[in-house]
Image 1 (cartoon, helix red, strand yellow):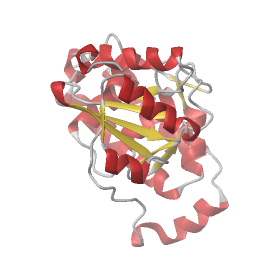
Image 2 (cartoon, rainbow, N blue to C red; image 1 turned 30 degrees about the horizontal axis):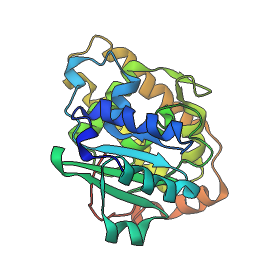
Image 3 (cartoon, rainbow, N blue to C red; image 1 turned 60 degrees about the vertical axis):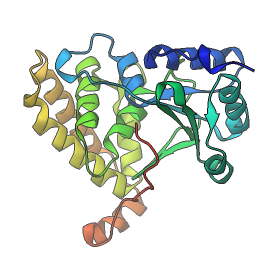
Image 4 (cartoon, one colour; image 1 turned 180 degrees about the vertical axis):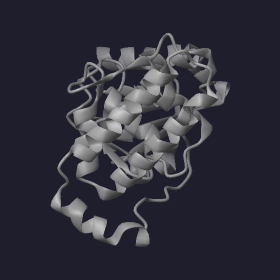
Length: 250
């Protein structure tokens, strides 16, 4: 059994430590949230940098039990009641010494919308793919400052592509084309982020704005599913997002 004294006080280093342990144990565990953004944008402009307080991960449904053991053995205290009720979707752990919470999303990311991870965690060895990472930042109905900063950072550090070598616009467009609610929130938030870019003194502002505009165009060009078209008839007369219980953030 590991001691909590082994937990690294640096949140980014601790995230990588846990991913490394998982890799050695063949347990699928990938970072998401702000720490994942920081890893993907190592030369992040100072204007969009922020403090990272907690850790967030994704794993598969089959690995939920292994992940719980991994965190217990790595010095973390489980939220016993929450994990017992939600182990098929989400797990919570605590590092009290550093006042840090760890969220593990199982199978998919579920907040205002659902972003599936199954079959996608092998793309990158430390984090969820860039496309899913971006979507987790943009799926919240009311964007906050940290989410805008993280989205700008991702667009600053990465262009669009048709595969996972950059922000996979095909993946983003396909997910939005199958879910009207996700489409509604993501496109609205892309517009919001684009309108806020000039608040940050970064040299690549025009590149960021161009990448957002091209992603919006790609989303609109994707053929929409029958379910999307049926839901589109209802529009905003019916709520298109969930209001999750607030037990943590990314």
